[in-house]
Amino acid sequence: MMNKKVSFPVNDYTTFKNQMLNWANRFNIFCLLDNQQYNFHKPAFECLLAAGKKANVEASTGRAFESLEQFYYKHKNEWLFGHFGYDLKNETEDLQSNNADRIGFCDLHFFVPEIVIELKNTEVIICSDEDAVEIYDAIILCPKIITTKIKHDIIVQSKIKNNDYLNIIEKLKQHIIRGDCYEINFCQEFYAANAVMDPLFIYNQLSALSPNPFSAFYKFNGRYCLCASPERYLQKKADQLFSQPIKGTAKRNLTDKAHDESAKNYLLQSEKEKSENVMVVDLVRNDLSRICKPGTVQVDELFTVYSFPQVHQMISTISGKLDDKYNWIDCIKATFPMGSMTGAPKKKVMELIEEFEQTKRGLFSGALGYVKPNGDFDFNVVIRSMLYNEDEKYISFQTGGGITYNSNAIKEYEESLLKAEAMIKVLQ
Image: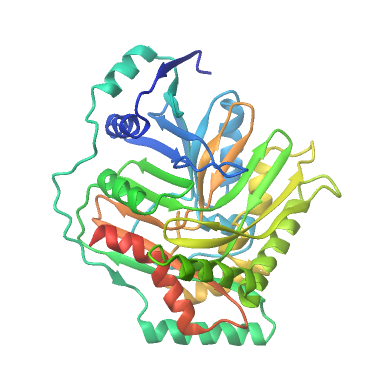
């Protein structure tokens, strides 16, 4: 357990964050979790940076959760940072993943950091066994802005062509009509091959264009996740669990206040968007009921619209009181993958996702986050995220949405393009 915890003043939040990232980029493994200073009533995870590793666990589906439990009990009083990949579904259900994967994140990775830094508005707290003063001095000597010498000449392509996408949506609707499922989250991949980029610079550009409360920059041995997520997967505070699924997206119009308000009202009035949202809420309630005390699972918010720089999002909040016999890993096993990225019923729609999507999801629609020494945790949903394999020179990002009986295939395609817009703009 880290014994040294020292605070220092911060004169300029943004400048210090840039210096902190420039300093951290020397490590092979580090993770920034950034709430972008959003101040919702249930705030996102703090601005935290974990750098270096004292120990780590990497695991593939099969015995991944067992490996994590063994690792956790060895390091129970330490901070843990890391990820759950979507294809852990093959461990929670009898499923397979056979689609192509050019990024190569392992299914599960957690590390005990050498240094944890919490950045607040006017102070920074450094936790480390090393000399905190030396770490702070090294950070403030780093450049105050994030620049690059790499020319980003990147061509983005879509894996699924327009007509093919529309045909797939119609086939999925036939499964809904037959009663195979009620809602399915379908995604397509955008990619760039032979791509050389500066991940930290691109992340900084993405954050400036699309700041979101569950943003993250994650570096893991030459693989990167540049995340601008607006969505919380699951949080534990003491014995309370919170999940905040997003279903319902409308493009903002910041140049016309009336049109922007109209887009927001569309979400509140749309039966299609609300039915999509409530199906996921019911799925999350069911998942939480497996690990929460009877009668404690409740819907705190239903159909609340939050506004972000690019889009309005319909978000619901579900909570419950964790049963004493379960630990934090049990919480993940009972609820993963998150319902907003699968659909209902979970197992059937995950089979259909594997059949109709053409790219392995990997870290996309998985989760990034942290676990505190006391067992509290907070994890996001890895969406609106670019994944990059430096050795393969391959960039991948996936977008999509929930398909229901009322879905319009053309509008679903347009929504997937809307969600990709910021990432394409940053790269091109």
